[in-house]
Amino acid sequence: MLVLLAGCSAGAAAALLVTSPPRKGSAEAGFARDMMVHHAQAVQMAEILRDKTESSAMRTMATDIALTQQAQIGMMQGWLQVWGLPISGTEPAMSWMGHPTEGQMPGMATPEEIELLYNASAQEAERLFLRLMIAHHQAAIPMVEAILERTDRSEVRQLAESIEASQRAEIKIMEEMLRNRLPDSAKVQLNPHNGSHTTGTAILTDAGGGVRVELNVSGLPEPDTTYLSHIHPGTCAEAVVDGIEEEGNHHEESQDHGGPRDIIPRDRVAPLSSSVRRSGKWYEYYDA
Image (cartoon, rainbow, N blue to C red; front, side):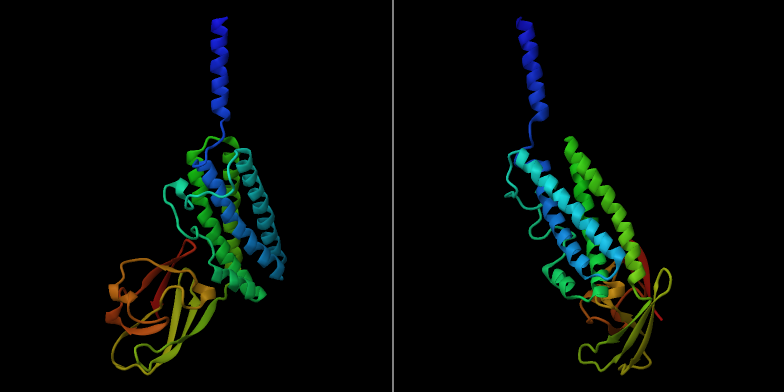
């Protein structure tokens, strides 16, 4: 009899251990709270675009994102209620991942970007939505990967795997949609800088794997000097090169001199061609 009781006690303890809910500071609770916030903004942006776009494909995409992520928010709220935990935590976002984040989580749109989306025309809203949502989805994937490394709860793993699969697929679809909505070329004005009187235009044209820059300038202070056009990331033709991050070993002064779309003497900027990255693709900017 004593052996039987001991066996029953051990079994009950094992069952209790398996079914014990996540605690307040657990990775599962942190993931649910952070992903609910992340999803809520995706739903907001999708609903803005859904009501604004004239494209049936874009409306279908936005509606699917809104409905799917709203349902997932409901699932994660349900977890927290079942686990006896509050919907909101006291720790900074992403603390459960080991790198607490003050303010907005990576990939989330700023209030200014949300306002732009609200006020944009239908076509402008489509392009802006795609850029914002691609970045939003890309930032969610590391969160999913982090919880998959930290949890053995089947319900959490199942949802995390579903989020990863659907958002990776949607990123590919949205990247193609964005490519189809970007113009092949853009013309921008060149602004004088540091009291110079140099003016002109630049035409940026898709060159298949790169961007060709055609300059038409006047008022250069030293006509016999060779100049390099330095274009600051994210400021030249937003619909074409928005969100560009420069890569490579640039001269330190290239970040301190010259405003957007300025003409700068070559000895002020290095190297001659700048490698830049956007949405995982590499572009080269050449002085045409």
